Length: 228
Image (cartoon, rainbow, N blue to C red; front, top):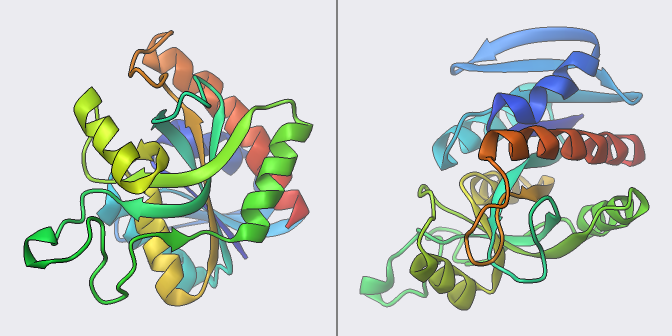
């Protein structure tokens, strides 16, 4: 079973519409659609924005649906001049940039209990996504993706996240999904279509960008599902 999570409806609605023999169930306020996609068993959900919603969704997919792989798709702001608007950032690992117990001597981002800062994504999955993106003519870069319950719009905060964690993109859900997968022994990959450039400037209106990103991401996710 492959779990597919997006924070916003635009990121998953087209995938839900393609599911064959679909069944819908609402758990903890989240609608899960399960069935067949590209010949594989899948469950797809819009989790909502932020780490808590993302974690609830991922844990439910694992416990209720038996997901053995989770793909998280969506948009992110770039932290690197190597990737621009509508390029893809693919997780080699994830960090929670707003996790901060440095006052008691911990490293920035250290997650108490599992005692790690960077949670590794599945290398096999990440490498496969980079390969599939290239085959579709998309520019994709692998690296650390940083998550936090903050919409990052200041250059100072972007610089901090980039310099502290070596992150190439930041968003609000991926590392929570990675955390849940890590403690459950489930493979995951985070896929982010970039919404702005490294300076933080957008080159098109956000709603227009999201529509284009959703189409590009859907095509890539379907290719991943077919190949897993």
